[in-house]
Image 1 (cartoon, rainbow, N blue to C red):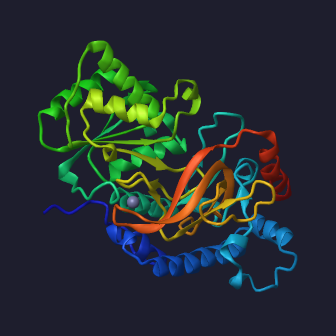
Image 2: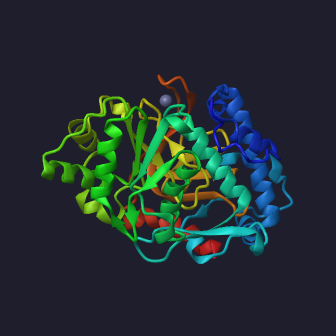
Length: 375
Ligand SMILES: [Zn+2]
């Protein structure tokens, strides 16, 4: 049996022991998960209050007296940074020379978020990919061929989405079919022709709009593949600038059945990530996005940002203990639901479900008001 090549990280801290435990991440009981979350997120909060001056000042404005015992703060009361503040401010908890990568949002409208990551944060991000990929299946390196249709990391530079897509290369042999911003669709189809005849499992990692381009091309050529159970399509990043072309997920899955020959809906998975979040959240075979225990998530009232009861839809906020170089406690523009599920996939954990982006000015206004406090 071949060794997987991703186990090179030194497990220096308790959180690393948890993040780098592969499929064991998903085996903690509900009580254990809550205990880990309480401890890790609160420790991260205290560390960032101590290490990031901008965040400390902000927390000082949100909590009148910093001498109150912050170590007993409820996770849902930890002061949240609006994602817009990552555009305006440099939120840094390590020395600037320790920043290994400044990660940029794709910037579909206006200013870009700029998030500094040190090696520890990047390693933990890869740990989250490794743990999350266990929800798809446990494959050894030699069993999988990955076709990456995401923008390539060399071309797209520091754009976070492309970078995350490219990280799958650290886990499995990957061929990238984007060069200088161009989707090499004929090369991708030729590779699929070859792989259809082989026995390895094929993964296509792609933004949904390029899966659609692949399908359109097959349609125009009158070609259909028949991969059966040997193909998994992993989408990430949403439709972004191509939102005008967006098709519902069910339609896309159905087209993948017709043109790529997948047999089950569980062969189509979406992952959630955004530049401010240091963890990639994967979907299981039942279509649920399981939250690992080092991340807390709350849906919040758009009116006063109070955490809502589980199962209620609100503005999504995340507290991610895996970020070392910046405080990762934020509220964004997505509306969604957080709830615990005893899932049929075998994992019992909190799950997130993203419904839509906030569009109305009123709801944005609330996040905007705390943003101005943060600056
Ligand atoms: Zn599940």
